[in-house]
Length: 181
Image (cartoon, rainbow, N blue to C red; front, side):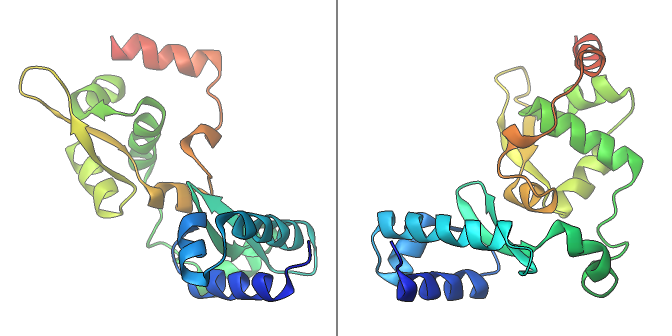
């Protein structure tokens, strides 16, 4: 199936969007059927992701798609287009973010139990950077807030979904279990 005009139309929409856009939204914007949109997105993904000529790749984040620079080119681009130190996270922030990513939903108290230190400032920092958010309340005394990762987290770490996180080895998994009890 060629779909030249349809491919050009969806490519233009994806180029203009700054946030991931779903098949349903692409269908609504372009007036194309969801099946046609899926076919075109698959063609664009193959074209951009496998062709060495293009500097972009079509990335899937959650249920949306977005053009991003190819990872292999980022070292050449980051000096001009990267936010050098603005988005760097400290070791403590990365540790807190990792605990939340692998254990979500999780409360502040549970995070502190695993880390062994207070985590209020790290949670505030990660929430400010929109990497985590409150996802609910735990059914426990005081109904503490539970935290989880956001779509921005997936975007920053170039993940399609939380299931794409690297698997923890046995020792790392055991550490979480031992300290969390």
